[in-house]
Amino acid sequence: MSRQTIYLVLVVALIGQLAWVSPAAAGGLYVAEFATSDMGAAGSGSLARGGDAASAFANPATMTRLDSHQLQMGMAPGVSVVKFDQDSDTPVPGGNGGDQGGFIPLIGSSYVHKVSDRIRAGLGLFSISGAALSPGGSWAGRRQVTDIQLFSLSFVPTAAYQVTDWLSVGLGTTALMLAACSETAISPEFTDDRDERLVVYAVNYPLAWLAERIGGEFVAVVLPWPADVDPAFWSPDAETVAAYQRADLIILNGGGIR
Image 1: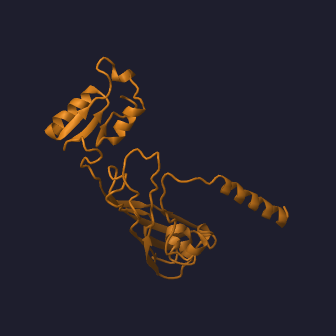
Image 2: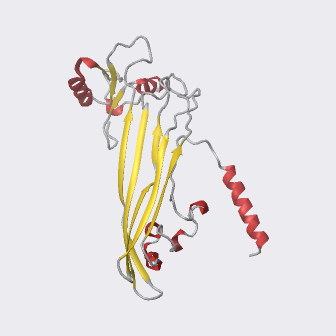
Image 3: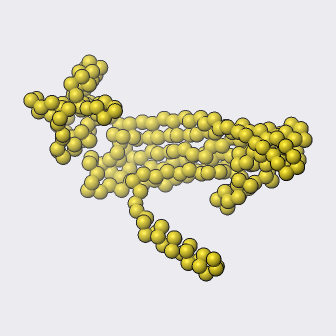
């Protein structure tokens, strides 16, 4: 295949990707690697890496190419910009919440220990994903979330053994630790005709009974279907769906059982 043909294929592929671009309903950030020597190359060639301590994370077998102990560390702040665009399809009133992004720490470190001429032990410590969301108080989605903090930390212990001058084998595992917290606004404030109780919509009689026994005087439990209709054979109309969306809490069964 000629160079011109390759360029043509790449251009056509790029145009095709751009043609299918559409707005995202949700988004996130995931950094495949951080504080590695090939980070600027988007991880290209990482599977053949063997020149520094980061091989403990990307390709443990290549740790046998290191002549001595090695330590590699890095840290950087991650700052996100997240905005919500309210439109006519937004089911509840409220604002856009301003810039909802926050600070996320990024950590990357690797260590390779020379046990013997043929054996290496390695350890990687990475924080490559997380979330920080803090919208303004008037945000339309405040009933879902008003604050999110998510931090991940991955421990990657590895080992390598040099079988021959041209063959090494390596193994490793990953232990992931997650720490998360979130806050939600639950005080009723969508309409003036609500009392101070939380509005709870249920999908069957047993769940409604359970909600009333737990919530007591602090909840107003709603069963939206007609009294003479079995809820298992009832389908809500658009107005009822909108009422469900305005509720403080919806209680339903799993497994497709209503």
